[in-house]
Image (cartoon, one colour):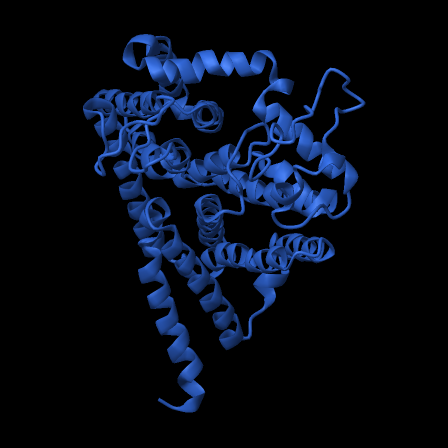
Length: 423
């Protein structure tokens, strides 16, 4: 091997190693987040080395990536202005997720073989969550011996109630894709089987007993019925069956009924004074005080107890933030867009919204133009994950960011493949 051929040699082997690690990422997103973070960082660094070897920097200057770089720069600047070294270091490290998604789009998932391997891995991860949820429901404990959570939510393969968000993300590309494909066949038996599978998946989300993931999956079914005409009738039927399961919850799972229905109605009835309402108002006050750049990485956690942000909203006099600093405090604002706004201000929020809209537009146009149902499944997944009217986990934790940017990169890679085939 000559010195001239060394970049090609390292580039080829880096890609093989990166993809071998990548296969395990969906499982490690469930159990083993530190290793998952290492894999994401390794893939991001490998892709940057690839661009250096190939001397092709154009992908980093086109499409959505400049918006990501702008958002990242504002997060770092805001963290510096807040004089927190820890926040600056954390903000600098956020770049790995953007580069990871770009690596999937431009480098790691270029071939159909790689895309099918990822689909298989995500399906296996989804089946594991599904089986563990039903094991815990039927036998009282999961594989680790953990019972359901104190409020009645099923935890699946986890200790705490995290099965709902994980199953929501995996649901369409990892599990729903199969009944959707069966629906394209003319045989009535396959259509009935597909309807049963869809209804079972929706019923599982109801039984899990986590409000927002269940609501978002119902929302995903609604988008599916609009987007894929051939599945409208079965989707509507599966939704009705899921609603029937919700009506039967007092018998099927009283704890899930208390959380999904009774507690939800109680919170909605006086939302401004609920814990979520208090957190949202506190975050809004922070954005009002720092509209341009926000408070930097983890700014909400570090400043939510500051007395300067504990006041009601003058425009909405009956919305009270509460005088107890603990009421409106948490580790994050429980909404992706409020989190971006408190971290990077309205400037960063505009960049983030533009980036998300670019992702959704690319996937929607490709899904409409292509017969590949996986494009539609990933579009639906991103719609659920980035729906603005939702309480969410922090986008900047590996548990959320790993899944989010995995789905983004996967979807954009499929868009690129579809465009190449049509060209």
